[in-house]
Length: 319
Image (cartoon, rainbow, N blue to C red; front, top):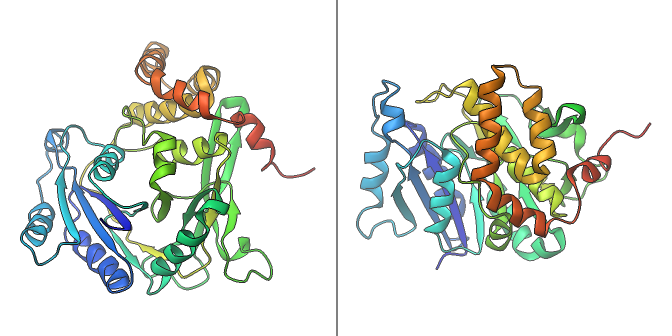
């Protein structure tokens, strides 16, 4: 059994997926008991978009076959186009007590991931939440590393995020210990399997784009957990057009899923009320989400220790 499971979903990410896997392997080998699980999410939905499948899946599957790379696993998830569901599938087929999620177009700064893992392994109970690497786009100059900041429009049911400068948020005199933020990207996120199970995994109704990071960050919030940034060199992210596309209604459906689970019916209904579109379509989305994600919402409602509104008060600027 591995101690750390690295979960990487991908769709048409050749050759980036190969560089990502190699980067993580070089970071962790001889240092950590790990496994890298790559989940190929090529499916009929992508094919219907007139996309041509690239060589990424075949390359990763070929590398994972045999006994030469026991740390590498190739999985196929083709039930729907959703990197959130692909991640759930990867976790279900993993063995680690600790989970690290990474996009399939990233390069790890040397020393950053293993340092974060060692710290989190020792301190995860007192941290009581997730820990994340700062991000940077490949080729960007030092000093422009990124993390998330909170964006609130509570009257519109909006609990969101945007980028902010990492260096400007590091507490003065920080001695290399993680510091809290209200939210952060799930690319570069490490959590325990126990915490993943407490969240219930990503909601089954989430599609390809939107909602997944809202769910993680703001469900952690109502559960009384924390989001922490590990002060280190960044996880480099390659910004490139993806081999699939998403649509407007799906994006807001995903946001509705997340908002319903962490905020309940009133917050989800408020969010959908201010989405632009045909009222009948938007109402249909809302009621469909409430019906299909009721079980997950009830689980979180039973476990939560505060409302999302109560949590948000902690992060509002003091007047």
